[in-house]
Amino acid sequence: MEVISIIVLFASFFTLLMLKVPVAYSIGISTTLSLLLNIDKLPGLTTIAQRMTTGIDSFALLAIPFFVLAGEIMKRGGIANRLINFAKSLVASLPGGLAYVNVLASMLFGAISGSAIAATSAIGSIMTDRMEDEGYPREFSASVNITSATTGLLIPPSNILIVYALASGGTASVAALFIAGYLPGILLGLAIMAYIAFVAITRKFAKGTRAPISLIWTYFRKAFFSLLLLVIVVGGIVAGVFTATEASAIAVLYAAVLALVYGDVSTKDFPDILLTSAKTTAVVMFLICTSMAMSWLFSFEGIPELISGFLLEQFSNKIVIFLVINIVLLIIGTFMDMTPAVLIFTPIFLPVVVALGMDPVHFGIVLVLNLCIGLCTPPVGTILFVGSGVANVSVTQVVKPLLPFLLIMIIVLLLITYIPAISMYLPGLFDL
Image (cartoon, rainbow, N blue to C red; front, side, top):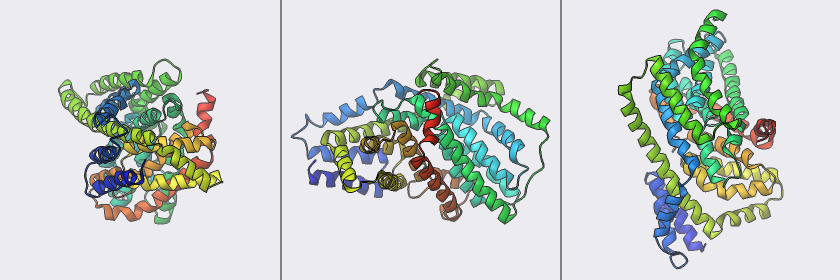
């Protein structure tokens, strides 16, 4: 690609972002402008429409609307309260117990719903007031909620891992990515809890009474069928009983039956649930369309090979290259939403890391965790703004208590980057 075309592509994209143009439109407009400068090489502007259409012509992507719908049903189906009560019965007796409850509930709900935003909203709206009643600052509660909600993007089923599987060109299977996300997601949750333990001891946060075994068993029974969804979906995929797309349809059916049985959702609620899910799916799919068009333009002009060659020539040590890639992705995550970032930058960095011996599945987990950190940071930070809004505190109030949690996430990121076994042990165990 000519230098002027590269400048137009990136300058127009970042300018549009700064003007607060929606990300999908920014990607589409900048791609079109760059394409106009290369019109002599291509059939015409219809190429954009073609690439947007073919970009979502994938059976695997059908899983996304189904998982979105399943998550919306669970969000309204009283599952959050059942998970919170179960988590509270386990850890509320520890110093800072309600903060642990927040983390555990976010991990469980985020994994079941597959949505960090849903986890932030559902768990935060319940836990913030409960934690304030026991002396926790609201901004601290919001920080716990914001960072712990990202674990659901690593622990399957996760829509973003499906998107990465598509962007990797099939080199990383959905099943392998799903099973690979367990240990990193759990490690991140435990690391957040470790910092909470330190804060709880130094600030002398209150602890609750120890729940008897009978009460733990009661709450476990109430949460059991919600937790069983994880076993059905992921177990079925790993065992080869069904594909990720088929699993997503099963998740919708299971969630609908469960919500109706619990009585928190009636048949009259489903039209609104379907409409909300359709709107969310439309936004995600439009992002995928435009991102795939830009990704194709990158590939057509050889940008991935150019960047790969540059990194491999400039840095001889793969440890340094992995660090540089992480830094770049952390910066990208601060201003770009997760879905387009995965679709655009996977084709750029995947050839580099594979040439250095990193497994595509391993890189997928590293990439997603990088972008999870970006969701918690301004200026784009979706989860940051949702978590602050739910807690009814300003973003500026949340930033200071959030910084140590972000540092914890970066430490976990480095561990996952340089210790492949954290991500690859389970896929190897199941021969995926």
